[in-house]
Length: 177
Image (cartoon, rainbow, N blue to C red; front, side):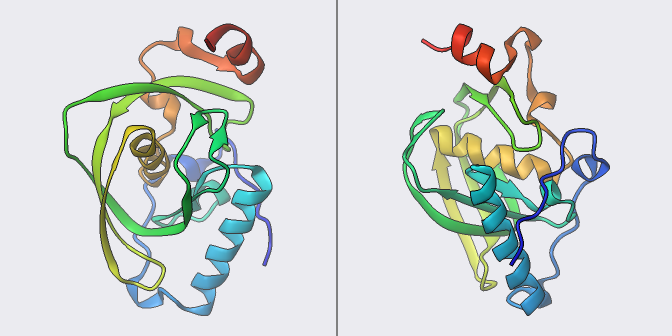
């Protein structure tokens, strides 16, 4: 297995709508290798989520794992390593909230984004089984952020106020507390 390079803003794959992952190839050796590479890359870069387009692979595939519950985003619920194939999101409630988001494809930057706070995720898991799960709060934001990558979107596209776009150090100095 290999740690992949995370492509950065400006790479054309990040602006493409990713293709659905072929269902008949789920659980193939190539699929398992891709998932393992994504997991190792996620760990190596210190992220909590990674979409396949972020490693230059234009497929609808996301991995999410939150091991350390204390992050730069505050206290989070732990989520075991999870694979989401060909996911769709439905907004379940009207409530929105904003969070400062970072992205492995925009290293060293943070931006404030408001998103729906109750969503339903439908997808296939790494074995090809259908799954349907509701997420709320910051976890809803995490899933929307990662799934945006599958639609060729970055969090900066969702920002309403560029005064709330900052380098990490300035975020820590001027925008926390």
